[in-house]
Image 1 (cartoon, helix red, strand yellow):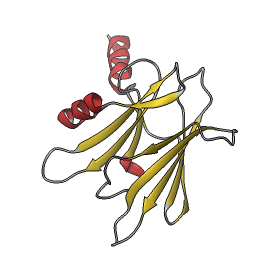
Image 2 (cartoon, helix red, strand yellow):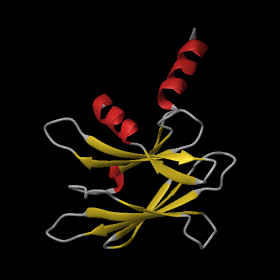
Image 3 (cartoon, one colour):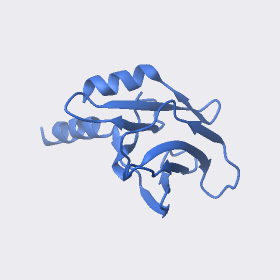
Image 4 (cartoon, helix red, strand yellow):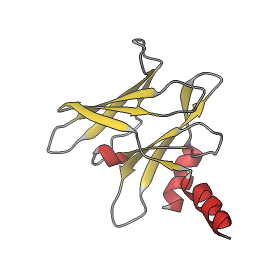
Length: 141
């Protein structure tokens, strides 16, 4: 019985993985280091913010592999976030394929929260935007 409960808890919480490391390197930049998959080197996500009007809005993100200089992918946001802090980004396996994906919380208030989700594509080694998973995440939370 104890083993069954432990397995159930592991399955429930295996989808949630917060960034392993993050650092605010400048007033308008965060760098996140995160685990993608045991077969893929750690990822580095550099987040560029617009910090005007006492708000921190995500402008774009750059993804590369840890230890490599070249940028694999630059992600432009289709809209801006209302507020940003280190908890606005989740690194989770949203589609349960064994690769961690990027989730951005971009709108939160007295209504449901809104998310953008990028799913890791092992064929291209890049992240693909998924409106469907963003909508599901918004509905779930």
